[in-house]
Image (cartoon, rainbow, N blue to C red):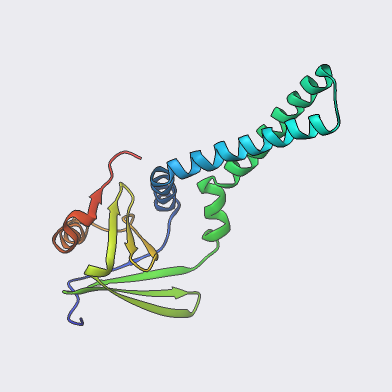
Length: 183
């Protein structure tokens, strides 16, 4: 599993790459997000009807409560989706962070060294253990079978290195490598 490095690159996490990850993740989980949102609306609407029934409100009060319900629902949905904006998440997670990644593309594996402000760790992943690699305009998103995900920004990489990395993923992963052109 070891060997000399075919390609070695250093990377941090920039906003554009993180934004691509957020869009890619939303796209992959859209059905789940939609289902959970619809279930939340149904639950809140049912609770509103139940409370109106329990307190035996007249029709005019019911309509007023329904208007309040929709304002409350709009506020809840705004809060939930606003919190999920990539810019806010990036600021919370990475803006003042000094996390750096060193990716060593070896013959049979990918070795990733992580330096989180002096705390160092490394991960050695065989190409067979990668469940998916997605390439977007701004980065590569590497998913392992262990439910780990790594972001490799293209920001500071030249075209030759990008082509080498792309070819390694195409050769080693075949149908588990995808190029995503539209997010």
